[in-house]
Image (tube, rainbow over all chains, first blue to last red):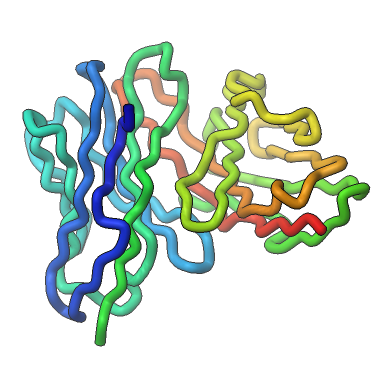
Length: 117
Length: 117
């Protein structure tokens, strides 16, 4: 079964508008971390934001915020005031906290975001 | 500073060549990773080094040989590759924190685009 699911293969957003990228996850481990990465066409994976399973508040980093709904197992990324430079592939990823998981990140299939001027 | 560097940026090699990819980080991280990424797919984990010892090998063919000379450097030696090995190879590093479950952000380098002819 897929551990991380991103249901939107591609999305368009108008410049200066907000956009939500969906991510749902599946784990039975009570301790886990959720990450969002941005990958422009140049290839580098850029870390955006992190949410821990025990965090009481939704994570925010500048224009990025994470809408964490633990009961629904969703961790959607919200980008406010979209900019042309936000056009990229976005990956949701999870690290489970048990020792057996080691250092492994499980990635979703990604969402390609295109910002229109 | 969250910089991971990789060289070369691009590499074209024949199936009989021997080449190496290099990765370096100066963040004091104790875990380093190699990923392979095909176009329009998420990264796939190849190897993990933890405290300079190989801790995870995701059943990678022996034509890929990792090496961790010290805690800042990670190499990937390539020999007798196949055209299907053409991909973006990403290096990452992380703190290897055990104190908070799930909190171990991986920071990625810009990648090496490998083409095997």
